[in-house]
Every structure is written in C-alpha cells, then in structure tokens.
Image (cartoon, rainbow, N blue to C red; front, side, top):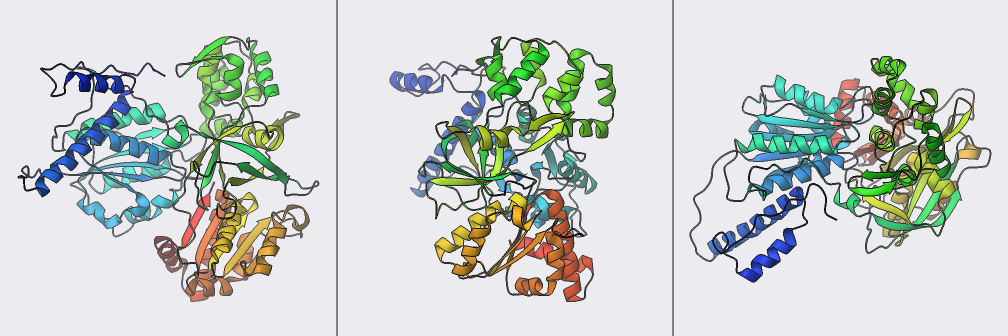
Length: 608
C-alpha cells in the first residue's frame, strides 16, 4: 500500500546512470512504492554489496583505496521488550545508507571499559519498573555510576529514552545516562529525547537529527540516502519486523489452573502455530493482538454520542469508528496523556487542574478506563478528535509457558484474567478478557515473537539452576523444565514458588510433582502468603534456606527471578541479606557478588 511518506525515486537516464534501459526500468519499478526509511535500507544494502565487491577486487590483487580516518559510530541499546532494539536497528540502517558501518551492540554485549575509547556514541535505552535500567543495561549503568568510570572529554553522544509517563520515574535510565556522560566530560551531539508510550514519530525524528549531527564527524562515503533534492525523509520509524507482519495462531485449549473459589482466575492457553514460521526459545515472550469488548465499544459510542458507522482514517487506512475502537484504539489502559488530551478536547477545568499534579494524575489514570473518564467528564467530540486523543492499541506481551521441544506446533501462555470494579461497575482487562473469555477455537489471533536473549537457560545442561517466581511469573519456568526434560539435562533444579493459597493457587502443581518423580525437578520450596496469619513470601523462604541456596551458588548454580517488579526488588534485597549472612560480609560485598553473577550470566531476571 502506498503511504503519504512514499517518495518517487529520481528518474534515471543514460546520462545519469550506467544502467541500460531494461535495468533502469526494473530498478524504478522496484523502488516506486518504498518509504524513505525502506529506501535508506536498500541504499545501505547496495552499498554493502559494493563493499563486498571492493573487497573481492582487493583479494584479486587490485589496489585498495586509501585508508579513511575518523571516529567510528557506536550505537548501544538497552532493551527489555525489544522496542529499543528496533529503534537502534532502524538508526543503524540509516547510518549504513550514508555509507558508514556503525558498531551496533546490546549493552549486555558491550564492555563498559570501552567507553574510554568511544568518540561518537548514540544510546537508546528503556526504563523498567520504578526507574530501574533493563537487565541488559545494568552493568554499564552501574559502571558509569561507579568509581572506575573514565573521563569522557573526547566523547560526543546522544541519548534516546523509551518510557511510560504513567510511571513516576519516566525515562529515568536515559536521564541517568545523559547526566553521567555530561558529568564525565562528554559533549552532547543533540538534546536527549524522552519518548512516551507512542514513541515512533519522536524516536524517528530524533534518529534523523542524531544522524545529521553525527555525520559532521564521520568520514564522508559515496553512498547517500536516496531522496529528492531538497527533501528530508519523513520522520516515521517502522514497527519491528516481527510486528509489521504478525503471524496467526488459533486456540487449542483454554484451561483454568486455579480453583473456582480462588481470588484470581488464571488460565493456561495453548495456541496452535506453524513451527516453520514461529520458532521460540524458553525465556521468550509472545505479543498478542486483541479486540476490545464489543459492549465496551458500544458504551464509548453512547457516552460520546458518536455514530459507530462514521468514517475514520488511521495511518492511511479507512475504518468506521466502531471497528477502530474495537481493533485499533486503546480503551482499557487509561494513560495520563489521554486524560490530559481529553481534558483539553472538552475544555475541562478540573482535568486541566489534575494535569498540573503528575502524582494525582497518575493515580487517577491507574484506577480507571477510558469509559470511566468520559462518564465522569462527558464531552461530544467528532470521530477524528476522539481517535486523536486515544493511544493506538498495542499487543500485550506474555511469557511463553512451554518448550517447543515438547510442543513443536504450540505455544502456551499463563494468563491471569484482570477484573476490578470502578464506581460499582465491573471492568476487565482488554487482552486477558479477550483471551480467556472471548477467544474461540474458530477465531484466529495475531501474534508476534518477542525474543529475550537476557533470560536463557545455561548452555551446560549439568549446571544447577534456581528458579524463583510468584504468581504467573512461573510461566517461563514451566518452559525451562520442559526444555531440560526434553534435552535430558542432568543439572539439579530448585523451584521457589509463591502465591496466595496452596489449595487455590498452586499453579501447575501436578506438573511439578511429575517433574519431581522424573528427577527433572530436584527441590521445591513454596510460600503461600494467605495460608497463615503472618504473610510469607518467596523472599522469606530464601532467607530461611539461605545456607542451602548459597551452597548451590558456590557450586555454580544459575539464579533466575520472574514476576512483578516489587517482588523482584524484595528478592534482590533478600539475596543481599542471605549472602552477607553466609559470608560474614556486609551488603556492599554481597552486592558485588550478585553483580559478578549477573556479569557471568548466572543471575537473570524477567520483571514486569
């Protein structure tokens, strides 16, 4: 489909091109519908082919060009869900189109000491939970804030942060990097960019500006971005390749794994997939597209007085308003920026005042959905204005709860159905309600794979592993155990699991018992917080069994933690305490031991 951002390539003639007429025609046909960023990628690809040809000529004895001097460009990304990697890869494609090969690395694969030698650096990083760096960025972040951080007077840098302004510490990790680079003597190429949930346009505009500023310091090359004279590519970053063309799955099984009287309802979903199209590794996540509840869509239409058949254009595609609300616009997660946009749209003074207090605004949005906002603050916008106020609907990510070694054409998810009341009205989570209540076996569902290379089983099947989880955080560990069983791994495995009640909430209990009998699972420690007067959580079990756990670590165990951010912080604090107690050291020394484990890939976390 042709979009508003499509550029027509420059015409080729015998005077401007070494191609013959037939070759020129084929080239023009191939380029006609490409976006600016796609044209940039093709340009870089062709430049790369030219580089290969040059290398081949040199190997055949032809003289090499004179060596070029000048700083290289390094692009680092720190990602938990893959968005920063997507932005970094798009930026690298633009750099290659200029004829320069950047150094593109995950922060997890970067040696912090190399910072002292960097001259041009672009950083793209997200923020986790309450202002924490993603797992892949932790070591570099700690190094920059430590005593060994070098002076960086010769560094020119840029920082792009991805975050969510509904959290108090919005883009804190990116701000930390920018502040430390500056404090250590680095010179910013451009102002930092802190992107909210809808990040694509801002990230792309920053990337293009960063490239222009960096180009002033890079050695010129012959390749250039293909564009019309005097024009600049439109600032639009494409979605990740895996999100651009989602795959289709279908429901095979929907099984409740909690009792009928449990406080929360948790389902195990088995989705059928084409294994040739989707190959995953335990530790990965699955992005799932969903549709908003039709009843919720109709409620929004009634509250706004709009006609569901009203035509609407979104990203160049035509919809009626009803379908846009069902499949393209976010209705169940109320973001603070939506509250502010709605307040401005209807001219609400109370909402304008609320927008001046970020903490109150976040609290207000956290406990409501869009229907609650418009019920409390009614308005009558037109369809286009309503759509502009809302965020686009995004796929939800779920940890994969199966191993493809055991289920080659399936992917399993562990889903807690979200339900709560607002002003006496029942509200349900958008994706969890769709998947657990409304998805039928004859309804296809669009999915994409979100790889997580920072959360992987050890390559050595003999290595012991300790798996710590609460609630649905146990999902990837179900996949881990299936994988170890399928591979015949002999390493010991210890599961530490917590939830509310033993009888109601012991997720996958029969499977753990089967793994115990088979020798795949060596040890199980449980913490059911509501089964006694004093609440007991997984961190309490860790402290109680600190000597045994530390012995496992001394014997080479790999430590994994999965669950909510608050649980992850509590577990980390417990680990500091138990290591200090077992070694007779202080918490600072214990922290250095955990840092060493993380550096060696033996302490991995997947928090949300």
